[in-house]
Amino acid sequence: MKKLFNTIILLIFTLSLTGQTFKIEYQQGYGSYSMKDLKELNETVASDLHFITGIENNFPMYWFFRPSISLVFKNYEIAINYGFQSTGSRVSAKDYSGEYFLDLEVESHSPGILIAIKLNDFNQFSLNLYTNVGVYYTNLKLEESFTLDNESLINESISLKGFNYFFEPGLRLNYPINSFNLALNAGYNIQLGEQGFYAENNKKYELRNPNTNNIVSPGWNGIRIGFAIGYTFNKRETKIN
Image 1 (tube, one colour):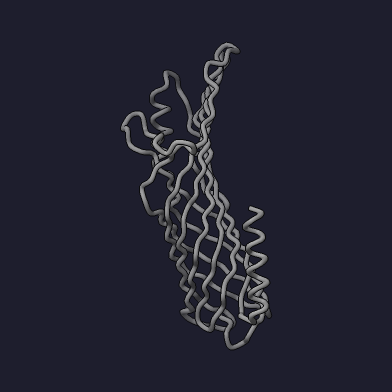
Image 2: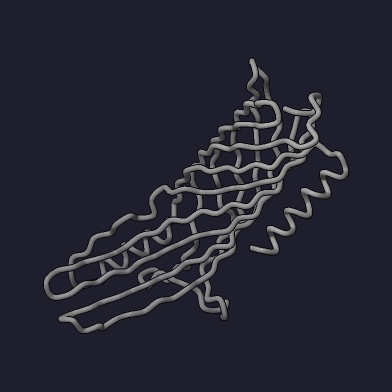
């Protein structure tokens, strides 16, 4: 993370010296995450247990964060960005005799390249079509615990990795205020590739559904709705959306 921060600072400094119009931006939003394979894994675990369980917070919508730096031209922008998103679930049961739970916590870091093209201007607003493409570096933590009559029968924790590509088309509404820019965006993220979760120190170990033997993959597909605030450097009125 420190290396990434230093690289961003160097890039900003370099762009300032060249006189190129550029913008730094911070976006925060709400995303839905399909996690189809992980949901099926929860259902498999719940059905194989010999007692009644419930599935809680089954990978709900949650916040994502996406700072970026972009070169700004008259009718389009080109940006590099970094995204972070997370969600999770729990399979659990508890009564007077003991407690069982399986926690799945999943997060991803997603560097990408975004291209936005202006479609139309009206009043002070501009409507852009954008496409964001990049990669997902996913971390999955599985934690399973089973306590019966105060005796720990299961207490395990496993960390796994995942790597996939993504493609996100969407629309963006911009509103400039001097050198600042406010924006709303709505898009749909499509995960590409079928690579599953694997052990960090042994890629041959892959997470599989015990009932189907199918590889369990991340599932970041879903809606992305966000709000962004940006600041434009070396602003040229003829080149800003």
